[in-house]
Image (tube, rainbow over all chains, first blue to last red):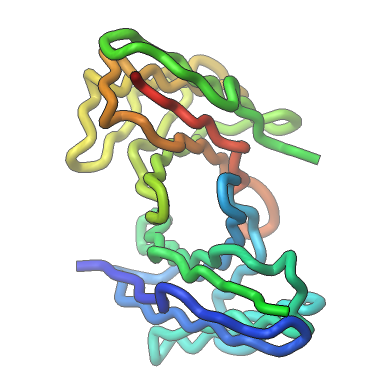
Length: 109
Length: 115
C-alpha cells in the first residue's frame, strides 16, 4: 500500500531551527509537496520537490532524497506564527496526492 | 489574494436536510477540483475528484449518492451533502490545481455542523 509517515507533534523554541521529517512509500513518484495548515483554516502551499536536493525559500527549506523515500522541511528563525500543522503530500504515478497525517508544530517563547 | 473561494464558510443544519457547498476558482479555469473532509485533529481525507463535464470520481468508502458532486462549469464545483446526519459534521475543503508545480490551491473550507 501507499503510506506517508510524519511525526505527530514537535515542539521548538522561538528563534530556533526545526526539521520536520517525512518518509514515503508510494506507487510512483511525481513530486513531494509541503503545506502549512493553521488550526481551523485550509492548507497553504509551501514547497515542491521533484529532484533530489535542497530547495530554499526564505526561512523555509525543503529537502528530498528519492532513493531513500525521504524529505524534510526545515524552518529557521522560528516565529510564534509558525505554530501550525505541516502536511507532507506525495504525487503518485497517477498524479494523485497521497497525504501524510501532518505534524503539529508548537512554538514556545 | 485568494484564488479559490468556498461558500458558505460555515453552516448549521438539522439532521435529514441537505446542504450545498460551492467551490469556485476565481481567476483561472479548473477542469478538475478536489473535495476533502477533515475531522478535528486529523489529516485531510480525499472524498472525490470533481471533473468538469463528467462524473466525479469517488474514493473508496465515500457514498456517491450521499455526497453529490456537480462540476457544471470550469470555475464551479458543488458538493451537496444529502440527508445529513450528525456524523457528517466536519470541515469540508475543496482545492484546484494551479501554478508552476500544479500545486493545490485550497478554498477556505466550510464547517458543517449537523444537529
